[in-house]
Length: 381
Image 1 (cartoon, one colour):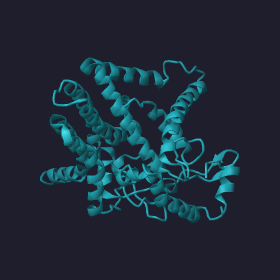
Image 2 (tube, one colour):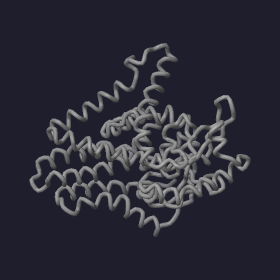
Image 3 (cartoon, one colour):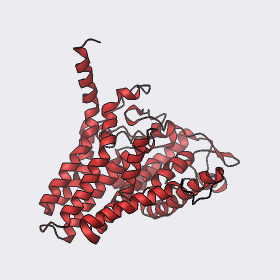
Image 4 (tube, one colour):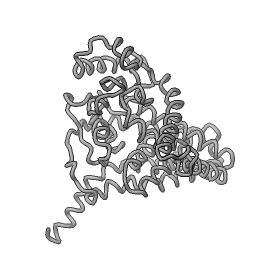
């Protein structure tokens, strides 16, 4: 390549990666909202949920696929967004704790409104980026993933996701797989309870295989606890007990955002039981897929979830999308679908016919799903 062509190639790489940097726009928005207060507090959820949904309708679908064999050194500008997010989110969250607890123009309700918006950011973007980072082999990236999760007091998500969800998705042993006809308001408390237990048991089982007790220092739950305690201590220093309350409030909102996404990603989809506790291998058909262009920019291709489960080690710019005959498709992007999930009758009206069609398409030999679930694959009907 000539010297003149090299800068042009670098610019091309930056240009292709640039749309995935859209999430950075939420950070100055949050700062501006904190400074103004009042009606502007609605801007963060409105932009994150509604604006991206509207632009999705205009921009349409992106069914193109990058070369999955692209080496890491060609993905620098994609990786940069996930690598810089932790320090930026850290400054945002704790800077706003220090600022808002001293800001005379914000009353108590406005502070809660502000940190509701912060929770939308740390849940929609922060936890999503931590998900990308925890799957990487690079030690620094995994640590940043841990720090992002500690900021929302959901550190065990790493253990649950890597050791339980990816292994048991679509089976009764995976708490995160939403059961057919299970509304989100029943799903959410169940997942909060079961995921913590399953994550702890999974780590304990790994230690037991090494002839180590669960309380051994290598259990990551010690690290999770220390990091989360550090976040509370910093909030206390910067904003007193009010600061701690705001930090915890944004964490609740962030976890709610995460579990809404978990709910829609596998709703009603099951892997076929092969007998003796064995299930078929995970395939693209076992996750709901979405190729809506703009929400995939915001969520760094998380909506290409079928390929993520099929090839968990792929970095987000290389995730592939699938045709409807290979993977089930959501009718809208995640922002719209998560809003629909908050209204169970609407959700069932939209998704239950699609689950039934999925069953007929991939498992036509199973004609009575109620009996099948009850006898061999005991997921609620």
